[in-house]
View 1 (cartoon, helix red, strand yellow):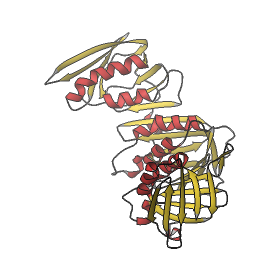
View 2 (spheres, rainbow, N blue to C red; view 1 turned 90 degrees about the vertical axis):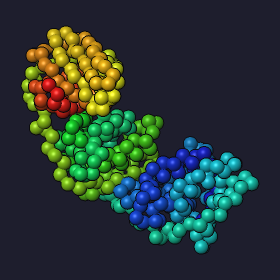
View 3 (tube, helix red, strand yellow; view 1 turned 180 degrees about the vertical axis):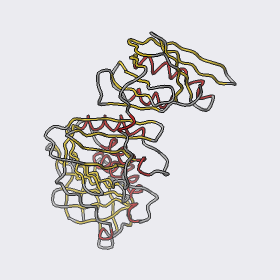
Length: 377
């Protein structure tokens, strides 16, 4: 194999491929990046057997010559080490040449590295995902959906299904749900031209987080293919495959009661910063607890730290209905929920002092954040 490639472009693609590689893999070959040179493109593959990323580098991009392939072939090179070498090379182009013993000669300017590679035939085959069940989403919408739900996945492995986001397609609506059993984030999206009847899968939160870093806002749309145990995201020249989590996701639909006892509408930005200030003391107390009490036109936030002191702050509401109440909550959960709501006005519905309360954008039920209160009163 022999090819020459623009170094800067190569580094960007290698960095994205590295996102699938874990140093803690049981298969040593998976710490490497597989490189395949074909007639008119170079294919990079990285995998940790949970997530696999395949990136195709075409010889030309927008009539700009990116790579020149003199000889076809394949090799697996040590991932992070190889990327570090490419980053530090002096010239704008780099040439990679391999021999039959899987030795790679990397040259750039006056610099030459010789690196031992591995036999590409030993590299595990990537899972094949059928391209029958597919939905197409705008990239910006998908990135937003991940941002609005992924923060609520559980970080504890005691219930593995909760470390993922539940994607459910029913009646032409995609619902993404994440919960760690103390809070829940739900984002719904009506699907146009949808041909899929029912999909109910759990995508690992870590995989969605990596996907979000790789996909560019410049790309218009992304195709999502669903299979029994894998999901494939295809955008531009990137293929991102993730294993699905096994098990049944809890039925969260019964967590949303019909009628509230108290409802208020409040300015998102003002409320967020008031909680941020009150949480300065809550964090010192070590428990992040903020107390909230409602009156007809005001919400009073308060927090106490035995060592430091107390804080109280009033925030005006633009609408108030129902009974006055007092409730305590985790300030971090509340701030995460407010950040996930893009509207300037937030509607909060309470169902009693010990029942979960919900936050949603005013006049929009497609984004719902649910938080469990903390017993203090």
